[in-house]
Amino acid sequence: MQSGKAIFVGNIKGGVGKSTLTVYLTDYLRKRYQRRSVMLLDTDPQGTAFEMMQPLSRADDIKFLPIGDRYDGVSMTMLDGILRRMLNEEDAVTIVDTGAGKVGNIWQMAMLCSTVLVPTSMSWTDLRPTINFIKELDERKEDYGVVNPHVIVVPNRTSPSQKNFGQLSEALEEVNAIMAPPISDLSAARNQTREFKGFDAIAGTRFSMEIERLGEFIIDYVISGELDRMYQSA
Image (cartoon, rainbow, N blue to C red; front, top):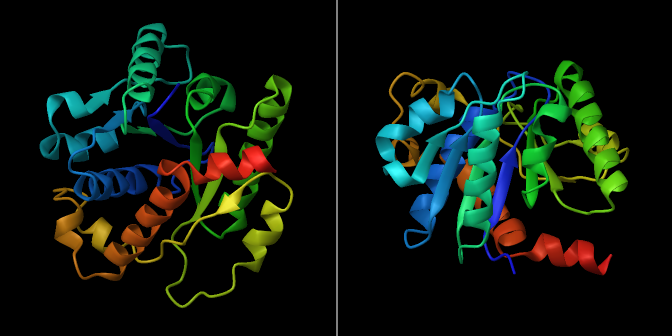
């Protein structure tokens, strides 16, 4: 029986904050779970998450396995092996960062994960392709007769004063997804882009509080298995 959890950070739309979300969430969970294995797998050919997190990681806690528009057999085989090993490791958490692209190129990875974390801004430029991305995931899950991976949408780059997420809530009525706490203040993250120093370096900022809130949401619903139980009883 699988005991580990794998979180797939993806969206067909580029520029929605996947890598930024990945590195801060990874570092937060590593500090929160110092005795657990928290692995980062960067499959985005740009390698942004790997570059940022490598100085803060042990060699066995981070891998760069680029998977682009063409089928990358070696990377896919290695990714498959690492994911399966981590899923069978007690209390292990794996976070997979991905590049923008068609669902067909990443579905094989997503199927092994318990959850797909989908960041998006509130702009229709991002929101429309995001909903289409989730719809395609839903269709594939229906074709395979599975409920995993569960989809969690993270409102990203929202206004700090924004309280009404009705537009996103209405859009999510078309798909099988839940909404996570939003991320608004990215200024602290932008200041660290060239020299990433991790979660501790943003302590006291609105951004750190939002990452902590999102991290605890992931712990409560994904890592605890609560989301699995909710879907099993539905």
